Length: 224
Image (tube, rainbow, N blue to C red; front, side, top):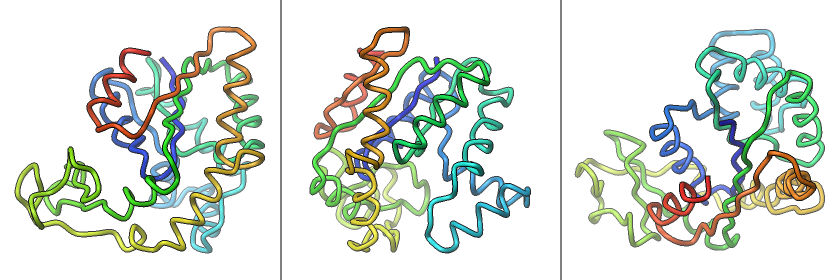
């Protein structure tokens, strides 16, 4: 089962991806992780990607798509994968669709987590990271995972914030890209939504991102 995830920063798509990874024993592949891995290994594509990332720019498609396809062709992806963080605009969606078809890879399911922009921003700014395990969910703006004061709700460890989570300007810039329905990330999601509406095997799933993590997971699993 090959799944493509969409959702704004703060929607919990990373959390849901991690849950599905454990449930279905399928690799959760994030574009950012692919870049970091290639950069750390010093590959030629990694070096090219780093030059753009260091400037805060999007990595060009001619670098990104080959990196993603190389990852999807690895042994652990033979039984399926979850792709998160790409495509980020409509043009990338078209190119990814073409590249997957050329490589003989079927995209089975596209998931879009729907969340209001203001709620998404608050959730980002409310995130708290446990020093013992960053995967322990803590957020001061979500009742279901609100930390115990300044301690992790899971293990009692100390909490910290990511500096970029507190930068409203940076959050706004990322959300400007995501919520753009003409050329941005939502436009890329809608490209696949239109493809699914035309028939074929691909399924497009829409999820309400407002409820707690478990409620979203239950809805997602029921629709897969």
